[in-house]
Image (cartoon, rainbow, N blue to C red; front, side):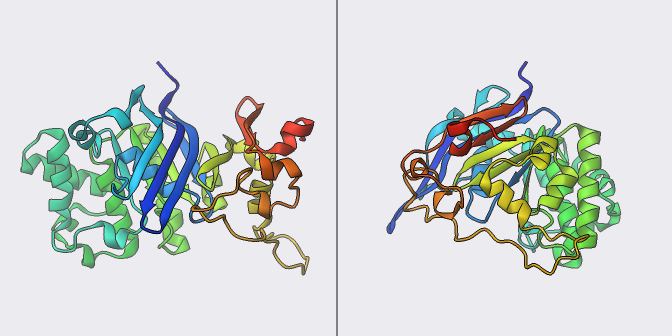
Length: 327
């Protein structure tokens, strides 16, 4: 059996609009091992959510078109799966927690009905058993089961996110995708949600893709670190490898942007110059070349290949192809 529950291989996704073709995903490749958490980071527009939607089979079509690549779930290609089988897998084998808990729940139905509907669809149980199961899951995330009779507007933002987590885990999925689940919450609730997700991962041995902008969140919850830029992975590896030895100029730039609490320096925060390239007019070579202070002529002409620099660390950059890996 493979060590990986999910394998995304050379995935390409386009959005064909009246204004032109938006190349959203351009060779995305990474693996999710059994029982491990992947921290997927990058700027807005890097392709994180689109990749997640592709895994779930939810890329809007039209205008979205998956032009090539593979998404292997336990060795079976999700892109070749028929819609009925994929629908049965969603919520059962894999689940997704969306970014905004305020809009993830239907405002006109009670929480109990929404959760029990999901359980009945995938677990082949009656309504009474499903309600009991829903109540059990609410208590797992720290909400009293009596709240099953409440509507979404009767919950705070943090509690709504807990409900979404409970709903996602209600059928014990093997893969959980969390798309910036703490973004809309205050820092105290963020810490509670992160601690909850760590506990649930250990309890249910769930493989997780945790999408976020915050490097601190990745350090808190992830086992592996994947950096996305312009629809592809530019650096990935174990949390320790990437955090202690970031290699790609973009990854280093992300770390340099973090404020140093223990520093007495009055220097302003460093920033990464420029902006992410227009996905309708991507550069020929390295997608980061126009923002990179180390850019060479070859960076504008040829896209770099992925180089393995350690057992659990790889980078896509000409700096290391030209003169070997610089530690």
